[in-house]
Length: 289
Image (cartoon, rainbow, N blue to C red; front, top):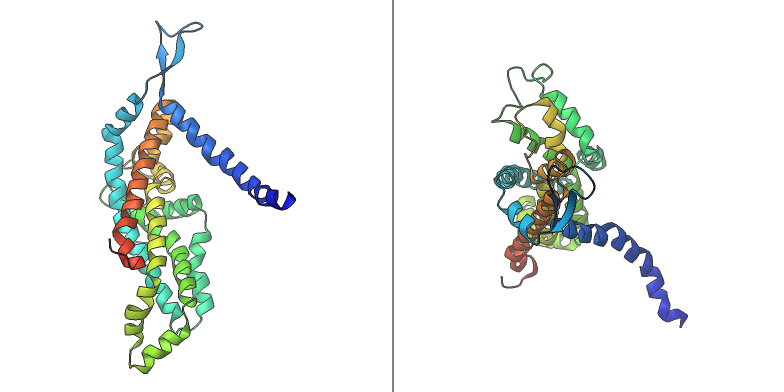
């Protein structure tokens, strides 16, 4: 009897944490998204304000909100820069560190990974001061101008995220049997050919994994624009979808609209993530797409 109950005892803490910090908040968000405050008369006195059920009205309004879709367009541009540059650099660094000719590999690994250890708010503040016209080392360049602020934010994300993705890819490279490389060298393959024809194909599942995580992180961009906003008037309070949720919930006090917008964001995140996995599944696992 005890042996049958043992797995459930070990699972109980994880289930409790999942329920308390994930399932319950999600359920409460769904509940709020179906409610709205109805004000009677001037809104004064007891019972003048009451919560009513509105079904899917909040979700429809959130999905049709032009501010939300404008934020999505900005995030898509931001993500196109971040994903390509960050993951490209991470792959190049991982391949370079895995090369037999690399020197000071440990020091280089730590140097590349170190920016990831800096909290996002601290990194954004640091770069924000470096972007200020009076403090930037590049005179005459306005990094916070409307035409440049997108690239300035992307630079912060690339600087902070490249090291983590590099470490994931490098760890997977170290797990590849060295015999594969020796066989390729015996066939006359150069280091570049080994990287392109041996390492990258074997590394493809890890590349897909880091790409999915990066897509999710890009969709949830909040720290960089929020921290840089006091430095420039070119960043609106709804620059990204999550910033709009924050404004609705904590500035205007409309928790119902914020909850509905959160659900729309979650749905789009799922579509993008699983859509990407669907497209690349055949290449990663040898299945037909």
